[in-house]
Image 1 (cartoon, rainbow, N blue to C red):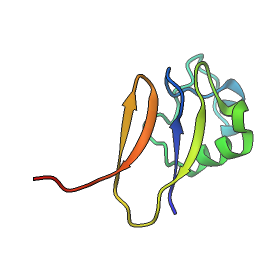
Image 2 (cartoon, helix red, strand yellow):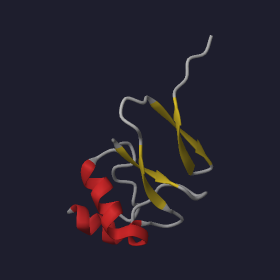
Image 3 (tube, rainbow, N blue to C red):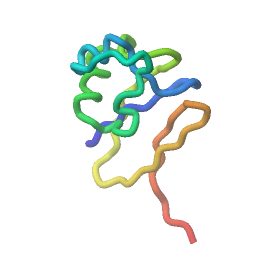
Amino acid sequence: MPKIVLNKRFGGYCLSQEAYKKLGLRWDDYGFEYEADRTNPKLVQVVEELGKAANGRGANLKVVQIPDGIEYDLENYDGFETAHEKHRSW
């Protein structure tokens, strides 16, 4: 099953300085690295390993598993993110 990192708190996605270090990245004072690539295996692993320590300012990052073969969309409401199965509409 594919895994994806979502922010489960109002405020928005943000990685901690410790997460940057574990990812082998130079801290940039923002914490937005991998924001557009939430299924990146390195990101998923770091969030799983660090738990709450992976959270940057105002974030509550969680790894969510999406069942195989399911197409999904991400929804963001004031930084709180959810994954929804895509459905057909006419």
